[in-house]
Image (tube, rainbow, N blue to C red; front, side, top):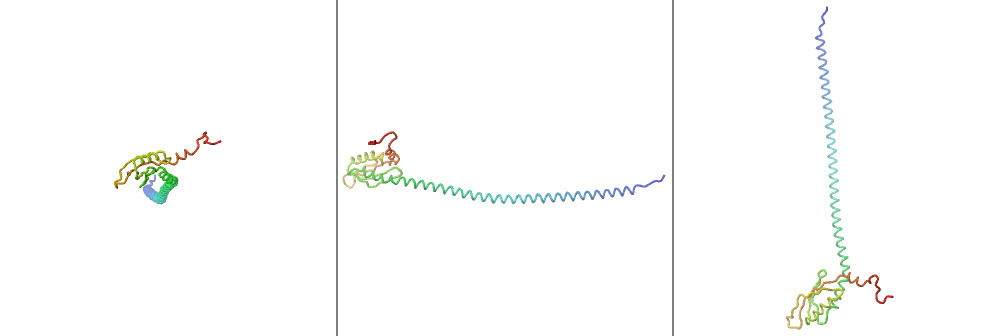
Length: 198
């Protein structure tokens, strides 16, 4: 029976398989490298795009912060303007009151009394004057109490004149009434007819 030597064929098959395995391993390595490279590029591109978005967001946030600051400034300016308007409105409303106060000071001042200084802070009046006698100061205080625009007379100081003249210097405090009660008194009440009405 003839003998066939298969060793060279097996060696050749083994070498071919090793070569194919090496080629397959190299192909897989190249494919893995390509996938890694493309993935890295994709991630880098996504990171760059995200950085660009972050920069845009930062710019928009800075713009919004600037607008918010401007809005807050406008709100503060608006509040200042509203406060000024309220002060102007209050001054316009109180302008007739000053006239009435001076008119009442003249009307309540009895003979033998004259004022040397009048000072007002809010509704508080400080009156400095000279009177021939303390009785005239008392009359002045009663006149203030019955005035429709002045109330709460308080005598602070009464001193005899040092120059040898007859009379005394005084300091008197009074409170100005607001205009609303006076206006309410002028309005007729509901259901009550004014005198002389048909």
